[in-house]
Length: 121
Image (tube, rainbow, N blue to C red):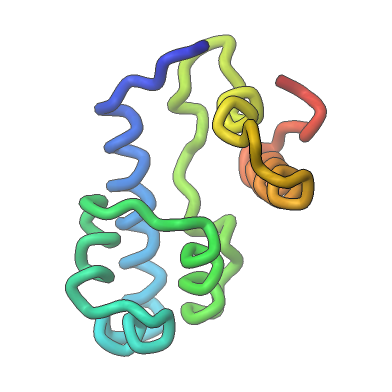
């Protein structure tokens, strides 16, 4: 099983937070207002934007909708996994035991964001 360097994963979430903040600023929306829309508190939004808190996929979609942007614009480079490793292959490892519907949704989303084909790994 390929290993993902913790510092690269941490940087992924920092970069994602920066993109969320930039979109929120562009929408001229406060952290408090975004928090109310997505059912969080302001400090959780601040933690997401700083990369200190990881965002669940469903919440990530809600954030994009609240900011009126495509969720793909909020995703940083997913090629942090290293040479020879695909994002789809890595995600497949974490989906074991989940329903087929959940797997299809997550794999489709990762494929869309990373430009990979869902059948590749």
